[in-house]
Length: 411
Image (tube, rainbow, N blue to C red; front, side, top):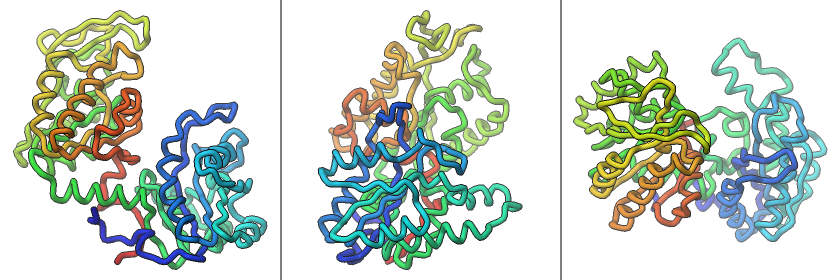
């Protein structure tokens, strides 16, 4: 599958070349240094292994972790990730407790025979996200320290490989500011771009999108833009209650609501009419008096709404039946955002039913894509990773491909 016209690692000769790979190792690590989810590390392995196999002189890995505020913080060190890479690759990965400066450049430039080096958290330096901050506040100055930071990172390699799709909508310095002459995608980023191009540019219909999640603002822009692509849009999660309240004045109890979304809801309805997109929402839903395992649980519907003191936490059984029928009719499926508070088992049935429906539709020949951290966690929870065509490392922002700041060379 080749759809994206940007250069990938397979389009250049990396033999005896120094390669710098921007990965996304922004993963959960507890205070004891134990990695809680290594899926992003595993996703980076094919590109690293490709560089080893094709005899790169050195493989330098760079990433950030969390938000240390431009200052070193011991608990946000990438040291534990180097140990995990050692284990997964079966090959020594050297860890350097800094990412720029004379000593880092000296050690990296001495590397040979495919040596792998992981540098320390990029965000221990404020220069890593200064471009992003400057875009939001033009008064921020680019100073001499920024130039030194860029030059030091750029001195480490002959080829820059971006394999951090989930970050490529952000103007991090390590993604857009380097002066390395050759810039290509890694295998992970290439696959992501190809899948998106194939799915979004020429989808097979019916194209069904399912948009949910617990953060009611997170997927709004993506939802609005998808209306130009899809035939059917299923809206679930907390955002569904916002629509119900605005459109039908249905009581939503303690479910999240934002007055600023009233115009957004009306714009979605107007645009859906324009593009003849069918909109579907849950017609019944599970409710709880608190978000905990020992909560009281009930079921309600559009006729009764959600009483005061209660919160909508999941899709109801009648909605599951309706959504299953729609999903089984699809030829292309895009899903981002869970149906409810799935990490609590009694609130997870709606999300589980969605996974089962998408898996069944995929088995029948539909192209299916799932994205978003909570979505991916739910898929892993029910061991359905091999039942969906593509599980993306991206989020709603990264699916706005035309707006992405992916600095790569073109074929």
